Image (cartoon, rainbow, N blue to C red; front, top):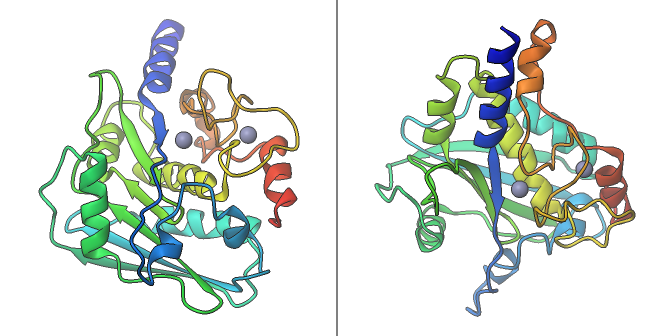
Length: 256
Ligand SMILES: [Zn+2]
Ligand SMILES: [Zn+2]
C-alpha cells in the first residue's frame, strides 16, 4: 500500500508541470497594446490600486469545457486575498465554439486570443483574458503534461481537456482542485512570480525551473505534488498556497 502511494506520488508530481512562457512584445500600435506585453510585466498594475482600481476578468471556454463553479470561487478568493481593487474584481464566463486547433502552439494561442478576447484595459479598469481550451498543449516530450500557460501580461490559457483527463484517473485530485490550482498558479506568473517581473525580496527561485519557487508546497512550485493531498486524504487535499517568500514579493510591489 505504501509502495502504491509512493508510486502515485511520483506519478502525480511528474505529471503536474505548469508552464510559463514569455514572448516578444507585440509591436502593433492599437488600443490593445497595454494588454500585449511580457508575462509578469504588469504585476503592480494587477496587484495595487495605484493605476487600476478594478479588474475585469473574462473567462472564455470552448463549448463543453466550462470550469467548475467551485474552482472559480477558489480563484476569486485567491485574488481577493492578494489584490487591492476597491472597485471590485469581476469574473464573467462565456462560451465559444471549439477552436479545433489542439494541440496548441504559441501561434495558436495568439490566434485564439485575437479572435475571442473582447476586454482590454479601459480607464482605471485592468482587463484579463483566460481561455479554457478544447485540447492540450503541443509538448516537446511525451511525458510532459502542461495544465496551463501564462502568456503575455494579462493572458492565460488553461488546457481543460488535459485537466479532465487527469482528474478522471484513479487517485487524482478532484477536477475543481486541479482547475483552481492551475488558475492560481498561472495568475501568480501574471503577478510577476518568480523573478519574472518582480525583484525578489529573498532568493527563492528554483535554480532548475526558471520562473518558479523552490519552497516545498508553494503554489509557485513548477511541479505541485498533489500526492501530499492523497496522503492527507482526510482533509481532502486542497489548493496549494503561496509561501511567505512569494507573498513578500507581491507585497513589495503593492499586493496584500
Ligand atoms: Zn509556472
Ligand atoms: Zn513560493
